Image (cartoon, rainbow, N blue to C red; front, side, top):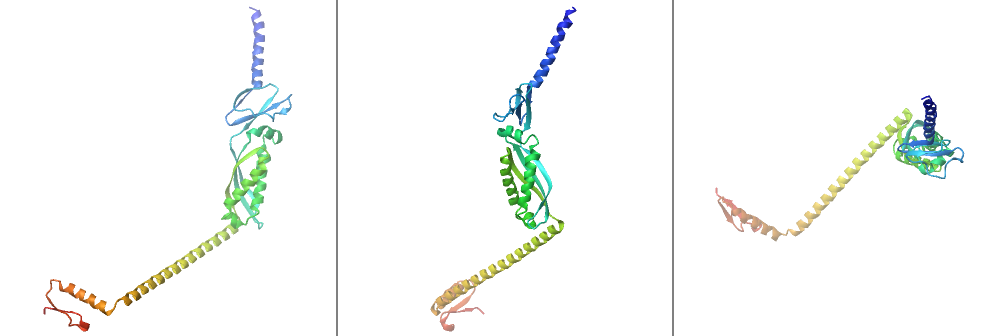
Length: 272
């Protein structure tokens, strides 16, 4: 009976050591994540093999795995101060959608590290935004060129981060804030331009209506000229006779005298 504790203690120690060994030799990678293996005695960061995928992995206890979120992520840069082409200070709110390149995760970890967001993406988006906005006036930023600016920032930033093992998915310009005085001046100008366009539209519409009426009048005049030329005295007399005979067929009492009117036209004499 006295030997049982002596036998049980080594077993207990072995179990504890086994638990520690397993905990140090395994890693569980969640969904939307990938792991970069660091070999303490084998060359450091593994860059020539794919990153460890989702699930349970066994590794040597002296090695380490750095887990990265590989899902699409968003960083919101609020109130970035940039200058327009004429030197006025503009404030931009920009969202950046990004994720690390899984196939280059080892290189990203080795060259930039886990804080690659603040080392790569944030500095690049700020630099590119300043460069792009500096090509435009405040009026263009406020009205017509907002989409173009957004696309330019995205394309230029994408080129810069692609070589740094980061994938840029989108850049969204959420808001452009101008100095109050400049904004009010632009809004007044846009309103005046709109009123001018409406006035020009009304003038153009009136011109087209006048032209339509002129063409219509000319058409009627031409038709009357043709009709007048075709109505000879003989035709008029025939039409008059036809009309008189039609009237004579009505139930009202009357006397028709043919050839007694002016120019030989029939007369209709009613009962007195």
